[in-house]
Structures are given as structure tokens and as C-alpha cells.
Amino acid sequence: MSSARSRILDTATRLFYAEGIHTVGIDRVIAEASVAKATFYHHFKSKEELVLAYLTTEYQRQRGVLGGVPGAGRERISAILTKLADLSAGPGFRGCPFLNAAAEYADPEHPVRRLVEDYREWYRDLMRDLLIEADSADATQKADLLLLVRDGITVAGGLGDQAAVRAGVRTALASV
Amino acid sequence: MSSARSRILDTATRLFYAEGIHTVGIDRVIAEASVAKATFYHHFKSKEELVLAYLTTEYQRQRGVLGGVPGAGRERISAILTKLADLSAGPGFRGCPFLNAAAEYADPEHPVRRLVEDYREWYRDLMRDLLIEADSADATQKADLLLLVRDGITVAGGLGDQAAVRAGVRTALASV
DNA sequence: ACGATAGCAGACAGATCTGTCTAGTATCAG
DNA sequence: CTGATACTAGACAGATCTGTCTGCTATCGT
Image (cartoon, rainbow over all chains, first blue to last red; front, side, top):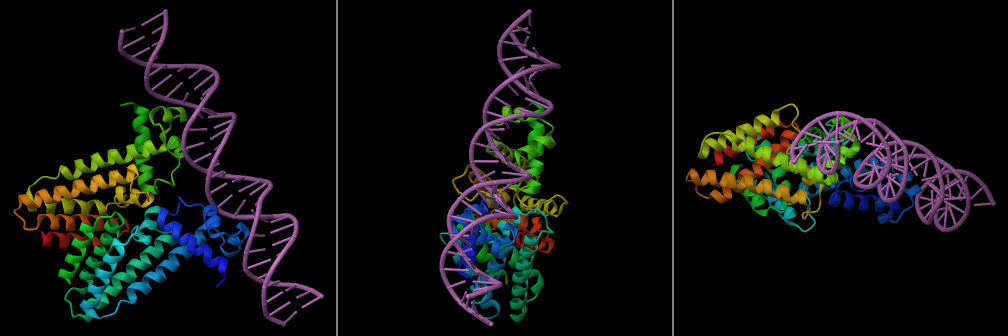
């Protein structure tokens, strides 16, 4: 992996997440990544390709983080929820990058939105599998709930509302 | 209320909600509202003032819609959740305008973010009052949960995920 | 009658955004 | 050595964005 490319992607990840995608221009990414403009366009066809690269790596990273949480069945669900709550209380937390991106891309057919869809489906499936593993009744419906609570935790956490985050975790844990 | 002003505000509301705030330019609002540029700047000092007018009227409208739901105590909470679920299944639904706006305004001190805060606090207080009215134990914590579920319902609804919306309503109703 | 207000059309300035292009340097594989 | 690749700096084009300004018309309260 080229050093310039990863510097661009790291900078874009930091800026897009912290400030939003449409508000951050290519020039800004280029300047803060300390690369030449031609170098940027050598590695990425367009800004949109950079946005997709940002969300794709974020997709893989998040799957790594939550997929790496140890345990099985209910215990693993519990650990994942705790992890989520911890992250959402962290200093730089500004909500779920996918939900934030979805708010900026209104067209449901847009590749960005498809990635958001993919991530949520991955999470829902993970929850359902863990529920089935725990011999839970109504695993499908409970997985839907756990997905909605995940959405809520990231939203509330991004807005600095830790009370709502705690309430979400509590209810989710009680309901599985 | 001047006709041009309300035409501007109606157009801005439609476009900002459907396509996002940063992606819609002033020129577009002006063109679709069929007003002159000078007329726009006669009524609004800047785009930001228009954005705040959009969210402020939306704030009042939403309070009117949910505040107008009849009933008391648990029944009223139930009716409000049903209303929310119905709205989120509607054709033009693209999530909560406040949460969408918050995703575009990263600075928590920004007036837009303060409005989002206000709306969520209003909703949380409404829920807490209704819970107290229903002699619910832990009204405060349950109100936090109902707020988080509201966030989740609007997010899931905006993404077209009706299964999650239904799961959220179900759980919220069961938990109060 | 007259001044204030609201409205129109559209040019303009200045900034900013994406993307292209020129021109040159450094590295490295064959 | 040579050619391909990665990189640098920065000018440039073309679009778009916000906001100002000029000039004109219509309405309405006093």
C-alpha cells in the first residue's frame, strides 16, 4: 500500500467523519494529507471514489471491531452492546459513519446508501445468528430490535446523550 | 405573512428535507420558489437564517402533530408511537429532519444543533410526563428509552427498514 | 400624492469546488 | 541504462455557491 494513498485515506476518514462529507473539499484533504493534487487523482478517480473507499474501509474496520468481540450467544450480544456504548461515550465519537453518510446521500440507489444497507444487514444477521445460537424465541424480530437499538445508541451517543445510550443498552440486554 | 416568503420557506422545507441542506443551493430554492434573488435576501439575511427558519417551523409543526395526538398516559404514548410508525412508512419519509440536520452540522454549539437538542428534550419531557401520569416506575429512565426508540424509528424508517420500525414500536409499547 | 414596502429580472463579485494538465524529480525493476 | 511508476508544485478551466447591487414596477397606508 502506497504511503501517499494511505495518508489520503486516513485524512479523508478523519475529516469526513468529524465534519461531514459534503462540507470537506478535496483541496482540504489534499492539503492535510500533504500530497499533490495529481497524486490524489492518480490514486482516486474522483471524490466519490474516495468517499466510497472511506466507507468501505470503515465497513471492514467496524466488522473487525465488533466481529472481534469474544464470547458466544447472549454473552457476546451483551459484550457487543457494552462495546458500542463505550465507543459512543468516547471523545471523538460523532455517531455512526454510515448513518451520517446516509443523511447526506438522499438517493437510496446511490452506492453510499447500498453500503449503509450492507452494514446494517451484516449487523442484523450477526444478532440473529447469536440469538439463534442462544436458542432465543423470535430471533428474527429480536434481531430487528437490536438493530434499531444500535441505530439509536449511535445517534444518541453522537449527540452526547449518554442517558439515552444507557437506557438503550439496558433495554436491549433485558429483551434478549 | 408575505406570499413570497412563505413560498421560499415551503420550497426550502421540501428541498432541504428531501435532498439535504448542504446539497441544495440558494439558487435552486430561489428558482423553484419563483422569486427574485433580491426578494430572497430581503426576507432572509443569509442561507443559514433560512436553514434555521426551516428547522424552527419544522420544530413547531412536529410539536403540533405529536402534541395533538389525543389520549392520556400509556394510551397516549401508544398512540404517538403508532403515529410515528405510520409517518415513517409514508412515501416521502426521509428520516427525522433534526437528526438529518445534526449529521450535517458537526459543531454541537451551532444553533442548528441547539434546535435539535431542544426538540429531543421536548420529546423526552413529553414522554416522562406521560409516564408519570400513568404512575410508571422509573419514568425518567423509560423516557430516555422512548427517546432512543424514537431516534431509531426515524432512522430505520428513513432507510426503508419497516421491520426494525415495527420491532421498535413493539418493544417500546411493551416496556412502558 | 407620496413614501415605504414588496416584488421582479438579472448582472456581478469573490470565493470555492472538482477535475485536468504541464513540467519536473525520485525510485526501482529489468 | 531505460522505462514505468509514484510523487512534487501549482496553474488552469469550468462550474457553482453565496451574497450584493442596479433598476424597475406594483401596492398600500397615511
